[in-house]
Image (cartoon, rainbow, N blue to C red; front, side):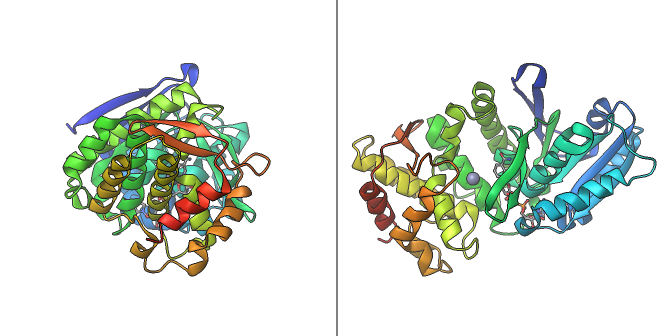
Length: 374
Ligand SMILES: NC(=O)c1ccc[n+]([C@@H]2O[C@H](COP(=O)([O-])OP(=O)(O)OC[C@H]3O[C@@H](n4cnc5c(N)ncnc54)[C@H](O)[C@@H]3O)[C@@H](O)[C@H]2O)c1
Ligand SMILES: [Zn+2]
């Protein structure tokens, strides 16, 4: 039997279990069948994951008596858009015989698949049940839990979407073995974020295993994932629709998103941008007397040990526009999370605690950005 941990996301009637383990894909049929009252499952995946994992998941569903279909779309963030949404939706509605509201969507892939397939599930026939089967570290520790679904618009990322919670999440750490180099770092940055906002013991855990993590074996990754899922589940349970504390998950993302956008989403990964964003936010916190410089050094050391950047110079391909404080300030002011042009910052008040600040001055932001140039 695969090693499994179950974490409950406490959301009343919309609550669900997240199973984390090694070797869970082969067992997924029973779980899927329990949410597919009319015996149909539709796996939505991307062109990379299809060849790797659609077959075993479909076979497991078949063994559980489900009639199973697979729909895929081209991999990559550039395909997380309305055109792909439309194609996948038409594919789903064109299945023969036609699906009914008892059909289950299985989102099999990284965060792109989870967001897009979740949004298809939220809107097809006015709402189908879905289960999330994340196959990247980022999707496992972050995207798959919490019910945010959607696609990008021309005007920005994730501008179209819905809250739609999955009925279950199944995370098999064994699939991370095939992740391309660099993808793990996206998830690791979110793990450091979780540790800084809520859990100093998670920071100890990451520090203890920092050298090993980038090439870790599935059981260690499963433990890391389980700890992060428990943390995210608690945040989401306390604030499902992001009216309050869920905003803490944006720590490192204010400057991070601006750097990504200024770079035109190339030459820097999301995890690298968030790592830089966290260092910048920590710098703002020191400037305001919220935390000691030693706390910044500690987080910078963890990030470096995980091969994540702590200065612009650590990202060789970064375009000059993405290092320009004025350009970054301009992007932050029109972020969808800024209100009336006031940039909101999530700042640590010590390691393991954060608060939201609406009064960070342009000078403080630009000092933080300049600190990334050193
Ligand atoms: N809904 C949320 O709360 C939430 C939170 C964070 C991020 N997101 C979204 O998640 C997306 C990023 O997710 P991501 O980093 O997982 O990217 P991704 O889904 O693009 O996956 C990264 C790459 O890895 C490939 N891949 C996935 N699993 C694999 C495996 N096991 N082996 C080999 N290749 C594999 C994919 O095909 C893709 O090429 C963004 O669109 C972001 O907006 C959503
Ligand atoms: Zn992120």
